[in-house]
Length: 612
Image (cartoon, rainbow, N blue to C red; front, side, top):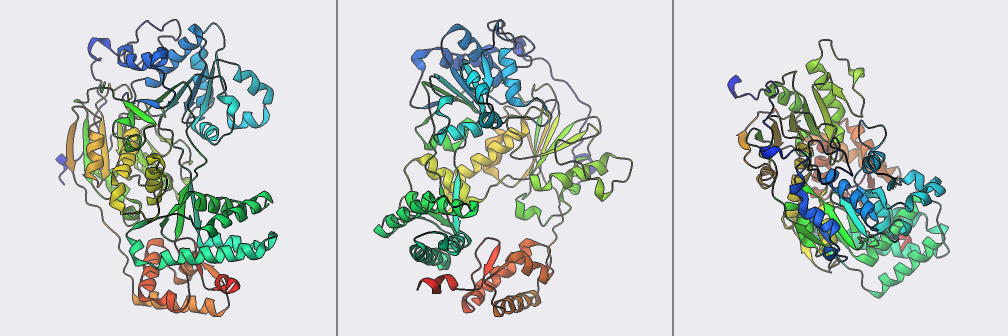
């Protein structure tokens, strides 16, 4: 690609003020919150429908959430705080406000405390307080004092505890529930060969030891049948446990849990197994997976969610519990540009592109008078910070000079952060550009369980799915993560931004671009060298010899990492390919070796023999 085609980050250029001075707050709520509090927010006219839902009791809905998708960075949270402050001061309504995080990256006082301060700042009296997990465990008198206030502020994590049936005093006598950002309650529970082995190995701790051994043998055999079925390499089966024997297993597990085992790992395995037997599950890659069915959304008299992703968030569409109230876009992005580089940036692909980030830096040719946010995963954050430090520093950067793992700004020019750490964060509000270096895919069971949880129909026996059946849910989640990351920068939309995304997913691209009206889309390419190490049959034969030797030593299991180290293979992906070849050849079956997706390889069939 020629120099003319490179993306240059030029001098920062301000955009003109929004038409009709819409950035300036109206005076309707000036007696509640100051002009400074609402600085750079969209005008109040943009939020009138939200205001009406908060104040007009004839619109209150105790049966479902009303989801408002006001555009990210327009100030929907701040206006909402203004409204609930006014509601508390002018009526007897009591509010529970739920926000994503307890603290922000650079904010020492914490986001919870900051929210409460903003609500209380211009009030004649203290009307709001917050409770965090530490306070709830220790400061009982302080908690009781805060619960008497009209407005209580908590985190998503604390709300999830309420949805488990805990902390009912937090919602007692409250009328309005407002949740900032999508409230994800799906808790995944899994059972693997290793978990069943853990239960079997500790059966002697319980009175019904023989029954527990028989149960684990039966379930291990059942799990093995799915592992051996080639159809389930590409299909995802759903399983119900409706037979009488499984009902008996549930009673047995409950008896064991009542004995309160002191081993945390054993207790967790028993609880997960109980949920799987009661709720049903899916099979995927050597394990059974389900969701915690004891968690359900708690609603009050009026229930609101603030979520800029709601326009394309498929999980809302699956459940009648959510009603999306569509909002128009506020900003015009004709002065900014969206660059789409069609490049596979999945975790597996990036592991083969060791020079990917350096190639990106060379291609973008960063100017040192503009601030850019790079977004990747947590695993690569430190390495990318190290490379950026070398890009801007005149002094050589040594290996032991890696930046800290927390918030790092290199010479005020660039920062690196990761998915899962960005939604609702204002740390980068004055940055000009954003670069997405990783496609934020989660492991596949998370999408399936989300689909089943929000569908609300339970798990049906003998129902099967293909991965493509969940593409809509997956793409919406990925689009939401990327959109929220991009909107961390240029929050007031006064700069000419470049939003740069390295990804290979046209459906996700379209969802994201639709959130930036009139933005200029440019498709581009970048050549990144792949590093494919040649594998030889020698490594495969060595692996066979190592495994057989360990089996002859009467070992019952071995960590995969130990085998990989003996083979001197540093890349886990290359080792997995060798393991897959051994499985296809029938080596494991021939030698009675079990190699599920986990961290271990099992040699002994002791579990089967003890119960036969």
